[in-house]
Length: 207
Length: 182
Image 1 (tube, each protein chain N blue to C red):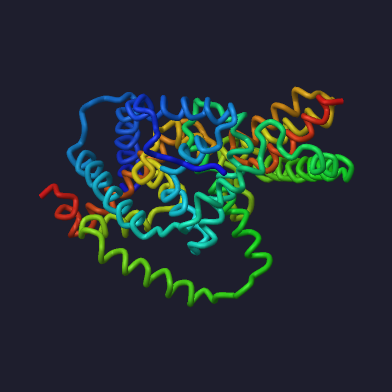
Image 2: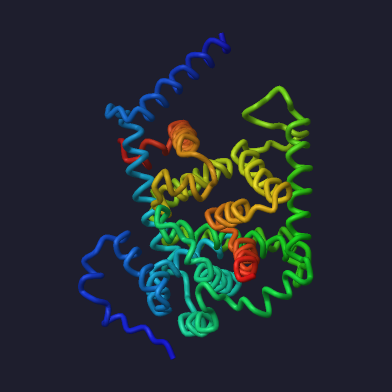
């Protein structure tokens, strides 16, 4: 039976950069160390479940998606190229799986939820979250939500997921130039919305 | 008057975009304030979102149990692989993908021949990157259909892996393993 003993993580691994650590673990995984794979993916569990949940709107489904994505990732790990980060790679698998599930659910709805009910649930959850956020964050998130999907996406990947331009380009399947111009446009739109708003200056902290 | 205003606004945005892409350091204070706000906001939002996630206590043990069934490089290759090849499911799915892509490709090109960068079909706006991806996938599938070349199949497997479509990549991998074992 496999087990993960985090305290056994060699000191050398702890002092490595993230990429070096990934490379070292990948080497172990390719030689058959399954616990090393779990060690590799564990830091990403919560963030990936959050992403899946934001798409499928169900925490249990989200957890299953991430579990499946990890298994599927392990199957293809021998082909993983270290030029893209593990997180970016798993993120793409999770997004694809979530899309597949949404398509399946559309075709075979188990418990049909009306649009009104869904909107009510979304609004309640969004309200509860806002209570926990600072006034500035809550204000800015409202503005981001007004942007078109392509601009929201780049903002989320850049600032929430903290991905590089290259990683965003990989996730979106476009070139870095496109990422930069979308991000630029997204920020210009945000700035205009905020500056047109009386509260803008205060909320941006430029008073 | 309105038109001139739009042109000036457009030029000003173009100038800012060029500055941004050429990494010029001179930054608008509003841009800097927005950048800082976005970083603070998303860090705050991430904290709230992640704190809400509850993972099942047996998540890791379920994962390990599932991994135990898998051997890297020899993934359940015997029965599953044989059934895939015998049933011709793989070939049919390739044929289906290629037909779908062919239809999509021609539909996109015929619907708006004058625009190379942004395709419009009725009210649907197609992202040029999506068109590029579909063309790439279609090209790889066409190569396989035109020549029984293993390299083309490997290229398609790579394509699916890099795009996170692991199910198809795994199916192709099974086929390649069988071909090489013959």
